[in-house]
Structure formats: structure tokens, C-alpha cells
Amino acid sequence: MNAYRMQVRTELMLSLRQGEQLLVSIGIPLLILVFFSLTGVLPIPEGFARAVDFLAPGVLALAIMSSAMVSLGIGTGFERQYGVLKRLGATPLGRGRLVAAKISMVLVLELIQVVVLVTAALALGWRPSGSVTATLPAFVLGTAAFAGLGLLLAGTLGGTVNLAATNGLYLLLLLLGGMVVPVDRLPSGVRAIAEVLPAAALSETVLGAFSAAATASTKAWAVLAAWAIAMPLVAARSFRWE
Image (tube, rainbow, N blue to C red; front, side, top):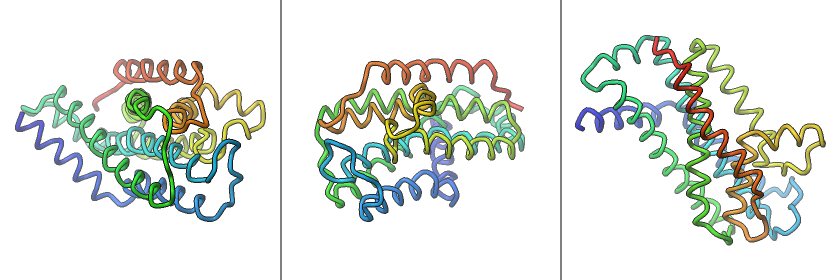
């Protein structure tokens, strides 16, 4: 247990000390929230009084994707490339507690993100409504889906290739995920693709939980659940520790 706690602390400190990971996990979501809430560049979707009412849930979904996929995936990928995972797996910590420590790190990082982003959103005038309790299953499913996706890339690609692939996928999912631009504003062909991706499903379920002006469809929950089940299973079967 002491080894597990020390590894959680180490994983968290490494994540918080890396400027590029802090930029992705907190900096970019916070910048998007503040900039688009104050400038009025984006049209306000129907049913929302202020831009922040639509942006805040989407930015929280973006934060989940940032920490579960980008921070976890890139960090694990470089640890694998440099042989760190192999050596840690052979220590008394063991592979089971190493994986548990990484999952715990992601959950703690997500908690920090939620506190920072919700505080900023409330300061910008956000007043959440709807069934806020539905955010918990959305966050859990989203974390499982994106952590599985991040570990799949980290466990099969080389460190630099994984870095490029993860960042490229992050940008793509940000554009298609309905986190800044509503999915229904996308061209019909692009929209059909976006609706079966985990980013759009997560942002829709979080938006439906936080806002009475939006309702998450059964399809969105089904898509998110499917990714949450499939990605960890595929990652577990294909992950190579060295």
C-alpha cells in the first residue's frame, strides 16, 4: 500500500511538473472557456442564455479527454520507450499497482481540472441546471473510454509516434466533439462521423446533465458506453510493456 501511495504521488507530481501536459489538461480548456465566453465570437445555441452555459459542460468534457487520453497516454508511451515500465513492473510495486496508480493519478488530475474550470465558469456567470448527478456516470464512462484509447496508442506505438498521434487525435476530437462548435452545425457527412466518436458522445451527455436546455440522447449514452467497454479491453490485449 505504501508503494502504491508513493507511486500515485510520483505520477501526479510528474504530470503537474510537465508544462506541456499542464497546458493540455488545464491551460487549453481554461483558455477556450474564458475566450469564447467573453468575446461572443461563437453564436449562442438555441435555448442557452449565455455562451458560457453551453461552453462550460463541453470544456469539462474536453478536460476529461485531456487528462485521460493525452496526459496518461503520452506519459506512459515515453515510459515504455525508455524501459521505465519494464523496470517498475519488476519491482515490489508490481504491474497491478502500477496500473492502479496511473488510474488514481488520472482521477486526481480530473478532480483538479473540475475545481479550476467550474470555479472559472461560475465566475463567468454559468449557472448549471438539469440533473447534475448524471455527470458522474458520464465522467466515469468518458474516463474509461479515453484512458483505454490513450493506453492503446501508448502500448503499441513508439514514444515520438505516439506523441504525434495522440496530439493529432486530440485536435481532431476537439474539432468534431461538439465541445466548442455544436455537432449539429457540422456538415452532414462530418456530423455522421462525429456522432459515433467518444468526444461528441461525452460532450452531449455532460451537456445534458448540466443543462435543462439540452437532453442527451440514448444513442450518445450507448456510443459512450461502447467506447468505454471496448477501448480498455483492446488496450489490455494489445499493450506491450517494452
